[in-house]
Image 1 (cartoon, helix red, strand yellow):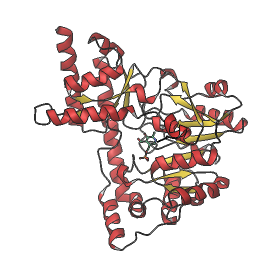
Image 2 (cartoon, helix red, strand yellow):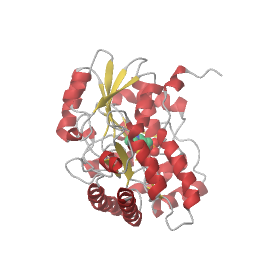
Image 3 (cartoon, helix red, strand yellow):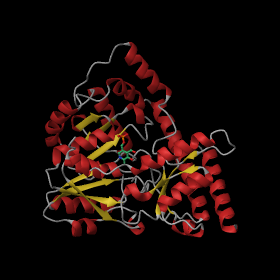
Image 4 (cartoon, protein in one colour):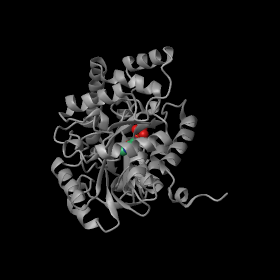
Amino acid sequence: MKISKRAERIEPFYVMEVAKAASALAREVAHTDRPMIFLNIGEPDFTAPPLVQEAALRAIRAGATQYTHATGLDRLRERISGWYAERFGVDVPARRIVITAGASAALQLACLALIEAGDEILLPDPSYPCNRHFVTAADGRAVLVPTTAAERFQLSAAKVESAWNERTRGVLLASPSNPTGTSIAPDELRRIHEVVSQRGGITLIDEIYLGLSYDSTFGQTALAIDDQVISINSFSKYFNMTGWRLGWLVVPEALVPAVERLAQNLFICASTVSQHAALACFEPDSIAEYERRRAEFKARRDWFIPQLDALGLEVPVMPDGAFYAWADCSNFAERLGISGSWDFAFEAMKQAHVAVTPGRDFGSAETSRFVRFSTASSMAHLEESIDRLRVWANATVAA
Ligand SMILES: Cc1ncc(COP(=O)(O)O)c(C=O)c1O
């Protein structure tokens, strides 16, 4: 079987190898006093709140399960438009919103609508691996630009300017980011967009973690800057609906017909049941519940990051959103005779029964020094994992 070059160019998702190993070991240790703690998971440990569940059941019982328009239920597009107005004070007309099967489908639509074969897209290193693979799948070239802690692990206008060449078509940013949980400072984002627009390029921004923002300095949508910015969002993270496969894309008015044509042909529509359920996300009771959960994520961050630092797993930039900690494990690993974050992840899993994600997937700049911890886990699990990492380190150093 001859596999397409396009498919061959997509790198494996190494996280899955770690996850597979963690699940196998978890079965072995399930009945011990130290069952596996999964801090490698990139999805909320909460599920959709009651009103959302009930809305899904009502839609199923009423038989409201036919295809919707490719752009999604108008009522849902309007609810999302209302959310931008209430939460961010930004006017995003419903006609510019396209409902998709998660941010993943939104990213595919944006890339397919805008990227020609050979076009280069700049992304920060580190960044969420699938984003560069969406570019590759559209026959574009993802160019990873190394970032530093001083830059909050995000691109800067200066870096975009110096990385730009005649093949560059635009940038694909994520704010807050996976794996770092850090956002781009608003002024810097504005400058990046200026650099991109002056060159006739496109600013794509993945705002999937925007709802889970803990710092008012950063919690604004890039749509406030310019209606030419393309924003990707989702019901997966803030709205706790990962498996429901629902997200959206906000595009400039002129791009709607092209994206609609692609969506009609590639997906027909996003899940109808999920769309009906998502209408209930915006009810006051649901929003109140989401806000309680956001406060819980923040409380976990506030407790967990100083604990990691105290263990020598230094988190160079305090995340302002999402539920990740991007920790430099090089000193900790060295003390224990381990080299690199890949081996650290496997040793932590074997010795402490704590599963974490090594940096490798997220790029190549300094990722062999970093691991990603997820705080989408209960406070009890976070406390227990810190205890276990401490015991493991002390026992190994003493031996
Ligand atoms: C930065 C980022 N973008 C996109 C996605 C895909 O999310 P969805 O479930 O909405 O497809 C994820 C999932 O973890 C993510 O972290």
